[in-house]
Image (cartoon, rainbow, N blue to C red; front, side, top):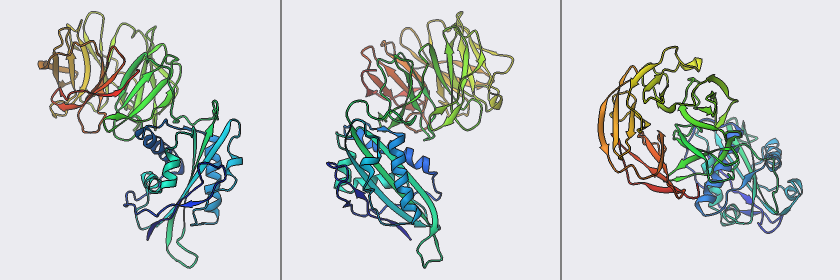
Length: 442
């Protein structure tokens, strides 16, 4: 037994509007285990904002206070194991009132036998989009803020049943606010950076979706993360603040704890490691080095072959060095490896495994625009240069070191002089497809 019940949505024109039933949706089984409620809430809010962005609407700020109201209503329905998708008649007076103009509430209830696969956050979104009233609310240009509350529990499928079911209650409250509105936003709430960005880089995967992301520092020093979707960027969120005087790098899972980490280098050369916490969050920085201000740093994966990520760096004399990582210890081995020389005037980029031999490779762009591939040999060494392209001296600022679209090939992102962001999808072997624009005003 697996059933998704009808949803409720208040009229978008009234704070305590009429309940409108949406048509039940038939969703395909997709996962066998229950997600934690907090993950449900974050993913549903993110999917709502991604749908709004795709439809041309501004993402909604996700408020802690509004989410608390939504969660309390879901909990009240869960307390009585109600399978009726009723809205909260008082939500309009319970959400923050300062600047409030209008609001709407959407509710969905679902359950499935514990022996069956359960729903996903996308199933919830699809159900709401299948109702004209809830779809209109989700894609309204009036709303500015959002709260999502989810409760999941396991109980008897019915009063007379000996079988158990997983139950899901989801409430989404939307609010239209004049002025700033609620400021108690979740860390993953969409962020409005102050552009143009001063620096950007790529990270292999900080959100856990199996794809790389774009990281950018705005004029106020805030670090924003942009997940990648099909040939476009998804809604961003703020990872941290105080990065204005730093250069940032995405080395992947440096300390081998299962989460992608960040490096930051200050203007006076101190190197900090920011351990990833999952979902795009990072811990406070820990200094792991100094004297790095004269180096050009290139995260390149495991170039030594010991399964631990390493760091490449080019010094002011043009020598290319490998700094082997120590994995769980989170630092560097005591001895660095000289990996090349003559790198003055040449840009270096991590390229992943270009020839599928299990060794990390690198790419380089010369001052004349030649694109060169250096195949890894292990032990921090690389073979000779092979020209794989030309015409790359276009004045575009390039960043690499991640697979953004999840096709197992390294990609490149470029920032043009007029602040357009371009995506070069990798074709393997050091070649790339014609770029497509994924951003403007950067």
